[in-house]
Image (spheres, one colour):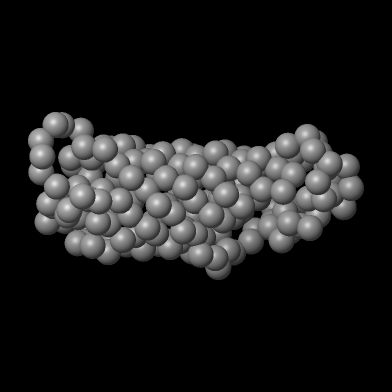
Length: 171
């Protein structure tokens, strides 16, 4: 079992759509925003989704949401499913996540051994043949900026510090 702690900046732009058709665009907290806007979508750089990816967030309750994402890097693809726990805040919202990610070779002949993350998890043979499948447990803490008012209400940016724990390596 191998693990890697990531100290990286994950930036994202996320946008959420109002669930109802009211014209209210001012919110007094992130919980009120999450009550009205149940689904968000965004882009991510780095982390459990690899070099870059797309994410969808479904706000189940004020503080709990489910995350799903697809990503890629040089010679590999990823999928990530996670649970996010947000804490009360106004514009800045702290949160934690825990989840599962699967990384696999994309079928190209890229040099996956050059990837700073993959080289920690792959065997020399897997780097040479470019055939692998990794099962990872993911965890992170982060801070999210939420725009609570105006025309861009519902948009956000976040920074994430996380870790990856390899629990399975196939192929």
